[in-house]
Image 1 (tube, each protein chain N blue to C red):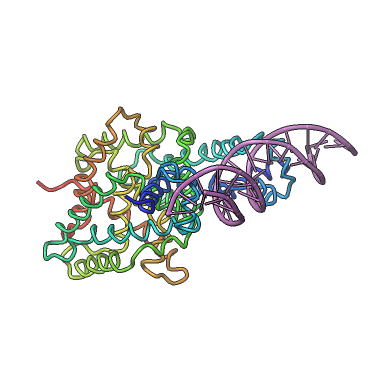
Image 2: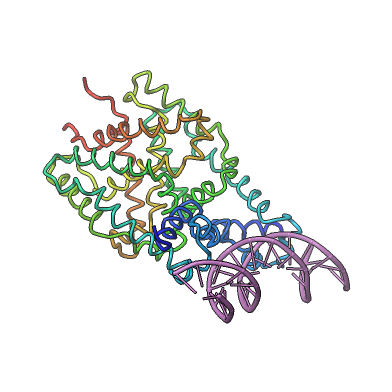
Length: 196
Length: 196
DNA sequence: GTCTATATCTGGATAGAC
DNA sequence: GTCTATCCAGATATAGAC
């Protein structure tokens, strides 16, 4: 890894952990093991360094979670895949949801990193299935927001959850693991066509 | 309103809008219309000013959303009340969810303001109903997390939602209003006992 | 490309007059 | 209680030698 790559890796870690405001150019340089002036040499300023990282990251994230939606499997299977993949991704990057929320609420310009097509087409597909009567009649936008909300909740609320449920060491991870299955069951219940 | 009250009101607004780090003692004093030195006279330092506000706020919030849980109505009605009350509260304070998430992830000590009893007893009650077979067999903690996740999602993700769905002016508020009913329907579907 | 030293700015907090 | 002036720490960014 050359210096530029070292800086990118270190900056990602520190920005995600501390947020844009909380991150220090000093901390990043120490983490990367390079001189602080190098950060400015390669990336001019803090804001630009920040953008570079998350343009790269989001270009792999969205294709991954939406991949299976193109297959010819049932919508129930597609939702199962989405929930599994999304939850797995979050479990290996548990700070991402809070990071994204904090960043984009403070710096609305940050949402540019969200590519439009992936989410739009997933929602459109769900709406078609609903309109065709294959699943319950629902607003696909509301449904999609609900699924994502259910998936990210434990990650954004971890401190409260630990406080309220006073969990033992490791218990939180168990909750996450069980949650995948539980959310999939909830989604199936929501999608199920009501009896007349 | 005396100076102390003016400061509290101004500080609440600025802290919620800008976060703890982003808030400036200068900005707060201007907003309150008092001299900056007054902030230190009444509240010593920034951290203490911050705590005072949210101890007061949370002491009204939790009793409100959990009030109806003590009645003798059905669990479905209780959940409807919870979702309505909670969503209404958020609609009049739409920045609160992001604020809480950002603050408590950065300053874990902040969770002390969350009183334990209210949420715990709501969850315990739901678990009893489930174990008794009055609703579907489920993990009440997972269920409760799901409901809260569904309610707060549009508030924490507003910038993405506007970006992805490219909404017209006022369309977001319509989504919020419709969401109350939609989430209530989803919750009913989740709670419904499965046929053998 | 890499480093040291430093300029410059910002913001919380304090001293002290009134 | 209220104000002005100021201190001081911390952080970004730059200048300039090598």
